[in-house]
Amino acid sequence: MNLDFKNKLINGDSLKELNKIPDESFNLIFADPPYNLQLKNELTRPDRSKVSAVNEKWDQFESFKKYDDFTYAWLSECKRILKKDGAIWVIGSYHNIFRVGTAIQNLGFWILNDVIWNKKNPMPNFRGTRFTNAHETLIWASKSEKSKYTFNYQSLKCLNDDLQMRSNWDLPICNGAERLKKNGKKVHSTQKPEALLHRILLATSNKNDLVLDPFLGTGTTAAVAKKLARNYYGIEKEKTYLRAAEQRLKNTKVIEDDYLDTLKNNRSKPRIPFGSLVELGMIKPGTTIFDNKKKIKAKIMADGSIKHAQTEGSIHKVAATILGAESCNGWTYWHYNLDGSVVPIDRLRQRLVNNS
Image (cartoon, rainbow, N blue to C red; front, side):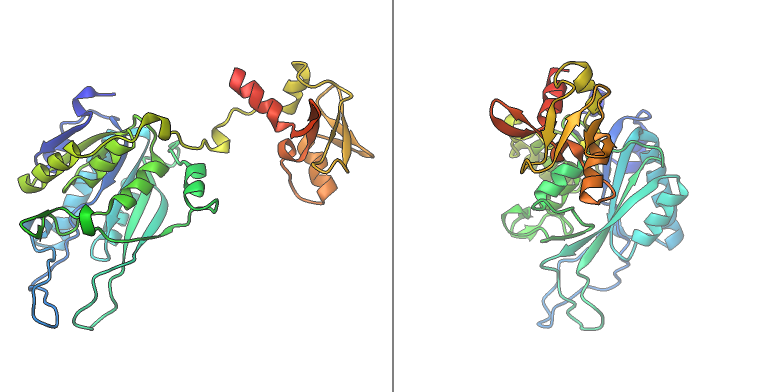
């Protein structure tokens, strides 16, 4: 890891600062670039009070071409500084996300998902001239099609009450105590909620990874990275935002290391053939194994295969045949006696994994 970019915030132009970074430095990038909202007039509520919207210069571009040139420039730099197995997240609205998505594909990233952030409490459309803009779109892409990107599937499933996490996320916008304010006014008009970044970093990065945010704003990415023991590097052009981010990080505490472990994906576990347990003498040929109700029985053969009635083969194949299924996890289907208790044969595999 390049220590020059570990847990630092930089005040500067994103393109210039990105250009200074060595190739393949970061594991993950989260980018919340200017949306190019093209607002021409102030937004007002029915009572004529002013709506705090994005009308700063940093979100204004002369033309779509200027915006596209800017997009290709910063995305090209991001691709260069991503590690070969790294990934990027980009968030946007209908104003820019389709142009950004085109650039992502044209530059050779590999899109993994588009995620819809459904805002539970969106700002209403005060004029009543179109649908309320109640979502933003995120694009998650690996550096290339061959990248072995991080995806903590089991952790996300656990986060979602043991259901697969879907690509539509219902999360509130940033408000309440989390919203940074100065003299009663929002410091940043589009501050992202920590819940959104918590899910992203938990899903697609690991402890001690180096995470970049090239458009840091008031530091949500850095704050969540610090909490989750990821290393952060943020670039922000506006000094007001950067000062707010620095103060925010001073007040951010890291979650205790004992509580940062996440569930490992099954595919990340070492592959251990059942026959290895027989070879190592952890379970002997001739041992009887059975289902959890001890109604179905099979004998273990010397080559690690098992035999039930007229069916023989691997622990997975025989179990699937018995159940009339295309496949079955034999590690959890088959059990054996351990000191008078019925336990899955997977217990033996876990013992081998822990001792390796």
